[in-house]
Amino acid sequence: MNETAHYCGVSVGHLYAKVDQYNLEPREFIGKKLYEKAALYQAIYSASKWSRSQSAGVKWVAYLHWRDGAKRFRISIGRLGAREAEEIRSAREAELRHGVRIISWAPLLRDFLSVWLDWYKAEHPTTHNKAKSKLRIIIQSLGHRPIDTLHPIELEAYKTQRLVKDSTAPETAGKEVRCL
Image 1 (spheres, rainbow, N blue to C red):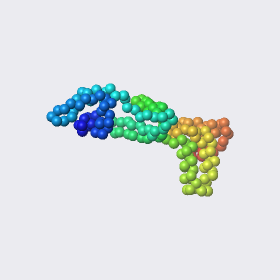
Image 2: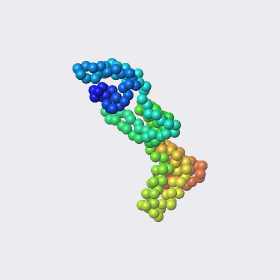
Image 3: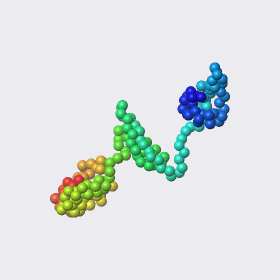
Image 4: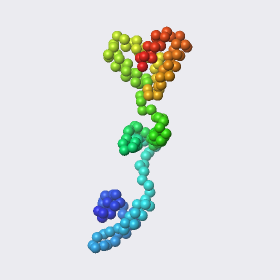
């Protein structure tokens, strides 16, 4: 029975408990109780496909696995349902296949600047409020974007908008962009 259980990938106790369910008939050979390999294979093949049962709304910790050459990667994408995890997996597959980033893993600009402003307050307590007021408008207009998706041309467009539409002094618009 040990060899049979090993072949099937289950414990001996589990095999004893489920052997009748698959109508496996043992044979006696040289004083041992044996099962035919073909019968075991047929029982395995005819079994239903294994899947984790997941209740509606239950969130699992999902991981992305991929390989780049000989190097393997595994990152957690958080507690997600099956549909959200599949959407992220397919987007990542498209990224790897086409070389175009679809999902940004970087923090949003507003989150990044919030942490930076906390650091700035500890390092430069006297000028913290000035920096905060300079970044307030940038956070309102670009804060929803991941920081790795911002391009220099967009910052120049922001600076131009501040100069032309908002009639801001060139020095002020320059200082706002330099804070980034």
